[in-house]
Length: 450
Image (cartoon, rainbow, N blue to C red):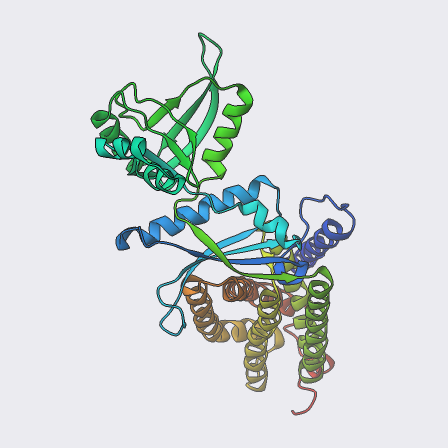
């Protein structure tokens, strides 16, 4: 019994320390603390942008890869500006949508309520392309003979033809300096697909100019001097360090693998977000109060123990939100409140088994052990089915609303199994006894029925 009570005391101390960590990191560590809660757009306020991607020029079997490259490019660009916890994801319209075959890019920027600022962060949807001179000499002759500005512009666009090498294959660009001349140069590295294409292009167009277009404008016109097999090319020219730095910036963060168009903007003010957060916290508090009341009335002393285990459960969950970290949204708070019921459900299964064991004549100590053992299969199967549902929701959902709910609910299911079986069992064993005790037995009974 001494060992059991030491274990129970240890669990209570651990629970207290976890709760203290949550409190201190949120309220005493200052505004720049490392473990603050990360709030989503609907709780912290911010901007929601919806773009539609033009994939008409992308082969159908490459659309998924192009959209993923688009997401990564926009995410890198946003991160430059230090936006906290941006959410960038892709969505594809379903057969229920009025728009057919739309590929959308969803951008959520918590804390950013200036729509124009948010749009500026992503840029003017520039498209990065590597082209070569059109071998058709008649184009050049037509340009020379053109008489109007409209004809000249139209023919100039035909001077260069696409190579298929775009920002989608660009891995990174880096500013370097020539070790001999100390002139700035730009090193560009392509992924495996770009490496093969670059080798083919440089081999076939050795000595030719390969202009780099950003949103239709030439930003550099390097000459192909060698065949490049390793996917790493060097751009050199008569530009200074600032120009080279701007070129690196444009290559890394200004290039989008496919064109996108802004179709929808939504702004959630900080006041509205704070109101949602307050209501979510109120729902959590009232849920806990009602659960405590139910447990105390129906199960007396075990109900108090379950309430203590529930407090530890909440402390552990909040600590995990900080440490993982989890970006909390309104749907996530809903999943958290719902998970409270799952955490109590396991305790109720144990308590009902406990009453049966006591009625059969077992002493309280043995009854606790046997009730936990007999209830475990039901607890395991019930929580496993809930966990599968959470995993499926998180895996197949394309929206942050559902994924936030599924993530919090799934974590809650796992933690509830720990607190119900480990914490509740240890505390029950610590207050039980093998000797008969009428008063203690009464405290283990139900408040409404024998």
